[in-house]
Image (cartoon, rainbow, N blue to C red; front, side, top):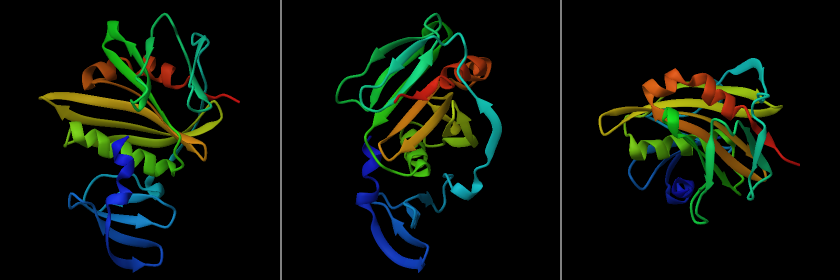
Length: 210
Protein backbone atom coordinates (compact mmCIF):
# COMPACT_ATOMS: atom_id res chain seq x y z
CA UNK A 1 0.00 0.00 0.00
CA UNK A 2 2.01 2.96 -1.26
CA UNK A 3 0.46 5.53 1.06
CA UNK A 4 1.87 3.72 4.05
CA UNK A 5 5.14 5.42 3.21
CA UNK A 6 3.41 8.76 3.68
CA UNK A 7 5.07 9.53 7.01
CA UNK A 8 8.58 8.91 5.71
CA UNK A 9 8.08 11.68 3.16
CA UNK A 10 7.14 14.38 5.66
CA UNK A 11 9.15 17.55 6.07
CA UNK A 12 8.71 18.79 9.64
CA UNK A 13 7.97 22.46 10.20
CA UNK A 14 7.33 23.58 13.77
CA UNK A 15 6.10 22.03 17.00
CA UNK A 16 2.76 23.68 17.73
CA UNK A 17 2.26 22.04 21.14
CA UNK A 18 3.42 19.10 23.25
CA UNK A 19 0.65 16.92 21.80
CA UNK A 20 1.05 17.59 18.11
CA UNK A 21 3.30 18.78 15.31
CA UNK A 22 2.68 20.47 12.00
CA UNK A 23 4.20 19.07 8.84
CA UNK A 24 3.88 19.10 5.07
CA UNK A 25 4.03 16.18 2.67
CA UNK A 26 6.21 15.94 -0.40
CA UNK A 27 3.19 17.05 -2.43
CA UNK A 28 2.70 20.17 -0.33
CA UNK A 29 -0.26 19.04 1.77
CA UNK A 30 -0.29 20.42 5.33
CA UNK A 31 -1.01 17.87 8.08
CA UNK A 32 -1.09 17.68 11.86
CA UNK A 33 0.76 14.81 13.58
CA UNK A 34 -0.29 13.52 17.02
CA UNK A 35 1.71 11.67 19.64
CA UNK A 36 -0.44 8.54 19.28
CA UNK A 37 0.74 8.10 15.69
CA UNK A 38 -2.38 9.42 14.00
CA UNK A 39 -2.47 12.36 11.62
CA UNK A 40 -5.04 14.53 9.89
CA UNK A 41 -5.08 16.92 6.97
CA UNK A 42 -5.36 20.54 7.99
CA UNK A 43 -7.60 21.55 5.11
CA UNK A 44 -9.14 18.25 4.02
CA UNK A 45 -11.72 15.82 5.32
CA UNK A 46 -9.92 13.28 7.49
CA UNK A 47 -10.36 10.89 10.40
CA UNK A 48 -10.06 12.35 13.88
CA UNK A 49 -10.54 10.07 16.88
CA UNK A 50 -12.53 12.63 18.85
CA UNK A 51 -15.11 12.97 16.08
CA UNK A 52 -16.04 9.29 15.82
CA UNK A 53 -19.03 7.92 17.71
CA UNK A 54 -19.60 4.28 18.64
CA UNK A 55 -22.68 2.47 17.40
CA UNK A 56 -24.35 0.70 20.34
CA UNK A 57 -25.68 -2.12 18.13
CA UNK A 58 -23.79 -5.40 18.20
CA UNK A 59 -23.16 -6.85 14.73
CA UNK A 60 -22.67 -10.54 14.00
CA UNK A 61 -22.44 -12.81 11.00
CA UNK A 62 -25.52 -14.08 9.23
CA UNK A 63 -26.52 -17.74 9.32
CA UNK A 64 -26.38 -17.60 5.52
CA UNK A 65 -22.67 -16.77 5.68
CA UNK A 66 -21.47 -20.34 5.94
CA UNK A 67 -18.15 -20.30 4.05
CA UNK A 68 -15.05 -19.09 5.91
CA UNK A 69 -12.46 -17.37 3.73
CA UNK A 70 -9.20 -17.32 5.68
CA UNK A 71 -6.32 -14.89 5.28
CA UNK A 72 -2.91 -16.49 4.89
CA UNK A 73 -1.19 -13.25 5.95
CA UNK A 74 -2.99 -12.42 9.19
CA UNK A 75 -5.20 -14.19 11.71
CA UNK A 76 -8.41 -12.87 10.20
CA UNK A 77 -11.08 -14.10 7.84
CA UNK A 78 -14.58 -13.58 6.56
CA UNK A 79 -17.69 -15.73 6.61
CA UNK A 80 -19.55 -15.26 3.36
CA UNK A 81 -22.63 -16.56 1.56
CA UNK A 82 -21.20 -18.65 -1.32
CA UNK A 83 -24.51 -18.32 -3.17
CA UNK A 84 -24.03 -14.55 -3.42
CA UNK A 85 -20.31 -13.92 -3.49
CA UNK A 86 -17.37 -15.25 -5.45
CA UNK A 87 -13.72 -14.72 -4.63
CA UNK A 88 -10.28 -15.05 -6.07
CA UNK A 89 -6.85 -14.67 -4.55
CA UNK A 90 -4.86 -11.59 -5.45
CA UNK A 91 -1.33 -11.62 -6.78
CA UNK A 92 1.46 -12.00 -4.23
CA UNK A 93 2.71 -8.46 -4.89
CA UNK A 94 -0.76 -6.90 -4.58
CA UNK A 95 -2.08 -5.40 -1.32
CA UNK A 96 -5.51 -6.98 -1.88
CA UNK A 97 -5.21 -10.55 -0.65
CA UNK A 98 -8.69 -11.41 -1.99
CA UNK A 99 -11.18 -9.96 -4.41
CA UNK A 100 -14.75 -10.75 -3.32
CA UNK A 101 -17.42 -9.89 -5.87
CA UNK A 102 -21.11 -10.13 -6.61
CA UNK A 103 -20.94 -9.60 -10.35
CA UNK A 104 -24.67 -10.17 -10.84
CA UNK A 105 -25.51 -7.12 -8.73
CA UNK A 106 -22.48 -5.07 -9.74
CA UNK A 107 -20.76 -5.17 -6.34
CA UNK A 108 -16.98 -5.40 -6.09
CA UNK A 109 -15.04 -5.98 -2.91
CA UNK A 110 -11.60 -6.70 -1.56
CA UNK A 111 -9.83 -7.73 1.59
CA UNK A 112 -6.52 -5.94 2.02
CA UNK A 113 -4.30 -7.49 4.69
CA UNK A 114 -0.85 -6.29 5.66
CA UNK A 115 1.53 -7.03 8.52
CA UNK A 116 1.73 -3.46 9.73
CA UNK A 117 1.39 -2.05 13.22
CA UNK A 118 -0.42 1.28 13.02
CA UNK A 119 -3.35 2.98 14.75
CA UNK A 120 -6.80 2.28 13.36
CA UNK A 121 -7.42 5.95 12.59
CA UNK A 122 -4.16 6.16 10.63
CA UNK A 123 -5.21 3.11 8.61
CA UNK A 124 -8.50 4.84 7.79
CA UNK A 125 -6.69 8.05 6.80
CA UNK A 126 -4.45 6.04 4.50
CA UNK A 127 -7.52 4.46 2.90
CA UNK A 128 -9.05 7.91 2.47
CA UNK A 129 -5.88 9.26 0.91
CA UNK A 130 -5.69 6.29 -1.48
CA UNK A 131 -9.31 6.87 -2.52
CA UNK A 132 -8.42 10.46 -3.40
CA UNK A 133 -5.90 9.18 -5.94
CA UNK A 134 -8.79 7.78 -7.98
CA UNK A 135 -11.43 10.35 -7.00
CA UNK A 136 -9.99 13.70 -5.83
CA UNK A 137 -13.43 14.87 -4.67
CA UNK A 138 -13.98 11.89 -2.34
CA UNK A 139 -15.83 12.66 0.87
CA UNK A 140 -16.64 10.69 4.00
CA UNK A 141 -20.42 10.52 4.35
CA UNK A 142 -20.55 8.22 7.37
CA UNK A 143 -18.06 6.95 9.93
CA UNK A 144 -18.47 5.19 13.27
CA UNK A 145 -16.95 2.53 15.44
CA UNK A 146 -18.79 -0.78 15.45
CA UNK A 147 -18.46 -4.02 17.35
CA UNK A 148 -18.58 -6.85 14.82
CA UNK A 149 -18.38 -10.39 16.18
CA UNK A 150 -16.82 -8.85 19.29
CA UNK A 151 -14.18 -6.87 17.36
CA UNK A 152 -13.92 -3.10 17.35
CA UNK A 153 -13.79 -1.89 13.74
CA UNK A 154 -14.11 1.48 12.10
CA UNK A 155 -16.94 1.62 9.56
CA UNK A 156 -16.48 4.24 6.90
CA UNK A 157 -18.46 5.07 3.77
CA UNK A 158 -16.96 7.38 1.16
CA UNK A 159 -18.24 8.76 -2.14
CA UNK A 160 -16.35 10.27 -5.03
CA UNK A 161 -16.48 10.80 -8.78
CA UNK A 162 -14.49 8.70 -11.26
CA UNK A 163 -14.95 9.50 -14.96
CA UNK A 164 -18.24 11.27 -14.23
CA UNK A 165 -19.60 8.28 -12.30
CA UNK A 166 -20.44 8.68 -8.62
CA UNK A 167 -18.79 5.82 -6.77
CA UNK A 168 -19.29 4.72 -3.18
CA UNK A 169 -16.95 2.74 -0.92
CA UNK A 170 -18.33 0.97 2.14
CA UNK A 171 -15.80 -0.69 4.40
CA UNK A 172 -14.62 -1.97 7.74
CA UNK A 173 -11.12 -1.15 8.97
CA UNK A 174 -9.39 -3.20 11.67
CA UNK A 175 -5.92 -2.93 13.17
CA UNK A 176 -3.97 -4.70 15.91
CA UNK A 177 -0.30 -5.06 16.78
CA UNK A 178 -0.15 -8.00 14.39
CA UNK A 179 -1.44 -6.29 11.28
CA UNK A 180 -4.03 -4.15 9.52
CA UNK A 181 -7.07 -5.12 7.46
CA UNK A 182 -9.25 -3.15 5.06
CA UNK A 183 -12.42 -5.00 4.11
CA UNK A 184 -14.60 -3.08 1.68
CA UNK A 185 -17.18 -3.18 -1.09
CA UNK A 186 -17.55 -0.57 -3.82
CA UNK A 187 -19.74 0.24 -6.80
CA UNK A 188 -21.75 3.15 -8.13
CA UNK A 189 -23.47 5.11 -5.39
CA UNK A 190 -26.88 4.01 -6.67
CA UNK A 191 -25.99 0.32 -6.60
CA UNK A 192 -24.46 0.56 -3.12
CA UNK A 193 -27.63 2.26 -1.85
CA UNK A 194 -29.73 -0.55 -3.33
CA UNK A 195 -27.66 -3.32 -1.75
CA UNK A 196 -26.69 -2.00 1.67
CA UNK A 197 -28.14 -5.07 3.40
CA UNK A 198 -26.14 -7.45 1.17
CA UNK A 199 -22.97 -5.44 1.70
CA UNK A 200 -23.36 -5.37 5.46
CA UNK A 201 -24.13 -9.07 5.52
CA UNK A 202 -20.77 -9.70 3.89
CA UNK A 203 -18.83 -7.22 6.03
CA UNK A 204 -20.40 -8.56 9.22
CA UNK A 205 -18.79 -11.91 8.50
CA UNK A 206 -15.40 -10.44 9.46
CA UNK A 207 -13.74 -12.45 12.25
CA UNK A 208 -10.42 -13.01 13.97
CA UNK A 209 -9.15 -16.57 13.66
CA UNK A 210 -7.13 -17.91 16.58
